[in-house]
Amino acid sequence: MSVAAARILSVLVRRGATVSVAESLTGGLIGAAMTEPMGASAAFRGGVIAYATDLKGSLLGVPSALLDKVGAVHPEVAAGMARGVRALTRSDYGLAVTGVAGPEPQDGRPVGTVHVALCGPGERVWHRDLHLSGDRDEIRRRTCQEALGLLEGVLKANSGEHSG
Image 1: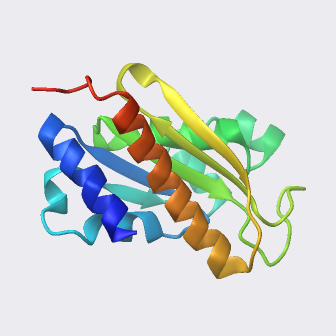
Image 2: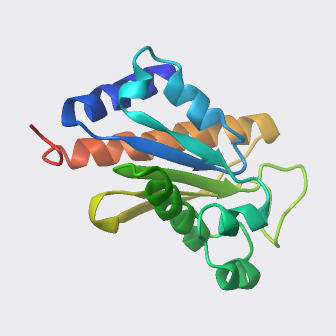
């Protein structure tokens, strides 16, 4: 994962852009991957581990009405987390994940249900809805890979952004 993180950080540094993360089921794995490469502080601003549902609202600004209606594992919640961490940390990009790593279902969602969202300049949001298999560790590891993959893909597709 550090190879992907190093590539992402290199692009962000070249563009003078920053990223922060909001993590639930991964519990800090994405932030750890992003801070592994030397020089990460030039583009990685920080992160929030909002494992408890209420923290998604109180720390990241996900509307409590939404959380009450759909629970913590939902694409709109991931998008709200991404927007929230971006605003909280004043980053150019906010990357967020929420889902069910197991061993039990949550909010009526089966194990392996994962939502990844990225909020970027202009409040644009990209997302991936995943149905992963494997044990808890595998789901968490693959969620981290998918999140980094989404960020890297968006950066590649928007290569004109923050150029200079």
